[in-house]
Length: 440
Image (cartoon, rainbow, N blue to C red):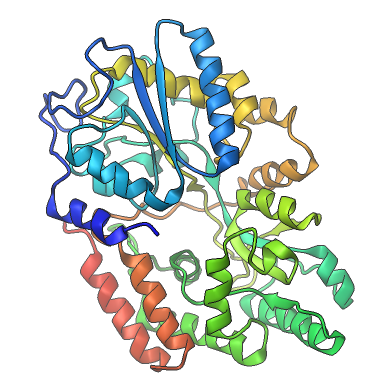
C-alpha cells in the first residue's frame, strides 16, 4: 500500500526542496533537482498507471524519439501504489524527473513549494492556447501560476449496466431530471428484484465515504469543500444530509452493508461488484467506463449524476491528471518539447487515445474519434455532450487539504457502521475541513 503518511510528512515538513531560481517556479533552477544530466537534451519522464497506460505511453515516446532524434528519453513508471512516496523521495533527494505525471490532490502541495515549473515560461515550446480555459485553469495555483498542463478531463458521473436493468424489468432512468430520491428508488428496486430472483446482484455498490461524492453533493447545494472567495464552505446540514442518505441506502438494501462496501472497494475496479456485473450502478470518473466494459463484457452506459434539485446535477470537468515539469530540470526546453508532443501531436493522440482522459483540444478529439471503437466512443461522446452544461470546476485541492479524502473515509465509515450519529460525524468532518482551508 502507498505510504501516504510518509508522503504527506515530506510535504508538510518542507523536505521537498525549495528550488533556487530567478523567481518562483522559474526555469533553470540550480537546486540540483531534475535528473536529466547536464547536456540539456536527455529527459526523464515518470508516470503512474496500469499495464495499458504503460504500453501506450511507451509507444508514444517511441514516436517522439523518431521525430526528435536529438532528444533522448528515459521513461520511468510505477503503479499508483508507491508512486507518490517515490516522487517525494526523489524531490527531497534532488533527483526529481524532468517531466512527471501530477494529480489534482498533490499539484498545489508541490507547486506552492516552487518544485514545479511555471509552464507559461516555456509557452514558445509548449502551446496550450487552444485548450479550454476553464480546464487549463485547473492547473494553476491560487496566485495564477500554471504548474500543470491538463492531459484531459474526467467527469464524475454514473455508470450503469443496462443488462441488469433489463433483467430486472426496469427502464433506463431519465438522467436529465432524476434526483437522489429517484436514484434510491431504482437502486432499491434492483436489489429487491435480485433478492426475489436469488441473484448475487445489488442496485448500487457503495456510497458515503468519498470526497468526490461529498464534493458533488456540496456543489449541488450551492457550496464547496474548498471554496474560493466568492463561494461558500459546505455546511453541517449538507454533510448531515449526505451521511443520512448513505445510511438510508443501506437500510433499504439499495447498497450492501458497510463491511461489504469496504471489501468491494478494496477488491479493485475490475474485481468489485460493478466490474463483475454484480451491481447495476456505480459512481466513477467517466473514462473508467472503458475498464468496466472490458471486465464485464457488457454495453455499459454513462449518466449524469442524480441531483438534489431536479435538472441541476452541477456536472463539472475535472482535470484527469497533469503533465508537470520540475522547476530544477536541467533540460527544460527538451521537457517542454516532449510535453507539447504528448499533448498536441495528432499521431501521439491516436496512440494515447482517451486512457488518461478526454483531451481538451477539440481538433484532437476529432482525430482520436477515427481510431476509437464503440466502447471507447461512449466516453468521448459523453464528454462532448456534457460540455454544453458543465459548470465552473471546483478549486483544486489545496496543499492543506491533501489528507481530506482519508479523513472523510474514516469518519464516513463511523457513520455507516452506526458507531456515531450523522450529526456528530458531520460536525467533525466540517471541523476537519475548516482546519484544512488555505490561509489567506
